[in-house]
Length: 414
Ligand SMILES: [Zn+2]
Image (cartoon, rainbow, N blue to C red; front, side, top):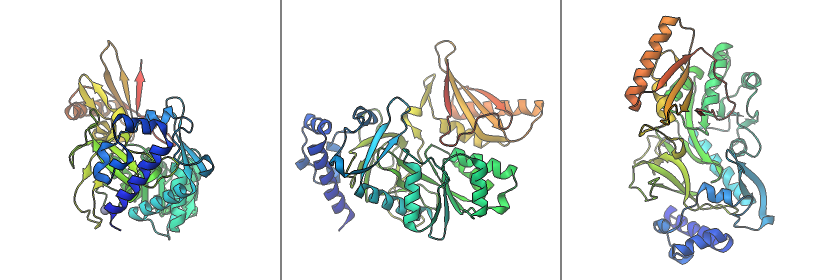
């Protein structure tokens, strides 16, 4: 069966299940005057209403369930940064689907059954660790479930068990670089591949991680609300992520109006699941900004690729009318010699107007004169690249707190 044909069949089934089992979505479809019969193929997708993060939150704990409660075999939840978490139920088939998506993604990244795979992500309600864990096992790799944190133990096991691949957040990988350097471990490790995701990162960050650890670092994308990791993965060509078109449909829409954008344009990523049973998502607004890249990848895989996520719509700061993403700040910092990529952005409002201050650690010790020069150079480059003046302070090495998961980049100072 052709992929388009299968997509149409699976989309029809998903829409029908939501119509029958999820009242809020049915009434939204009715409001738009659309019924399951109107959805004959992926072409009809735009007729359907969106789902948002707040829909999922409002449905707490189990309002979006398109199967019987008895069919649910596992629960995950996405971090509840604002109040209650979003609960994500899985049926047996969903777990199998997820493992399959994950295995495919790991193959895309270049993982083989001969690899020793260390999972440096939090186990538990969070989907990250278990997704990679079961995907890597299914592929036949040797899995080391170290979980997050305890860097000393991570490195010890990496060395003693001969870890070849690890997965973590990019900011934790950067922290590993630091510890590997400090302890002179580079030559003792067998690492060849790092699979990084869970937060927006830049090419500069990739360059540092690759050169310091001697690995190829690929970008991984997924989100708990949709299934977990396993939605899209970069191949070693590192030219955009290969999305899983078997299980999902991807659209790019204007984040303000919701209008579907032409191929290649940047906007908000919207995902529809095709095979999920317990909690399908239809036109789920991810708030992640990216675009779809046309053309065939040098690895030979066909089909649109997903560009590295630029940031979340919600991460965008508007400073004196100018849009600023943390990833733009990171790209500037990464281009300046002597600066580490351990940084933080402070937003404050001295007299009603928002101002930005960037703080970044130096890579090594600098005398006063050198430090002042570096601060001036960085402030100038930030101004040139962002289009606004921002404050900049160079910190001594290791002045900022290290995080075992996602780094907190932006803080609001009263
Ligand atoms: Zn490729």
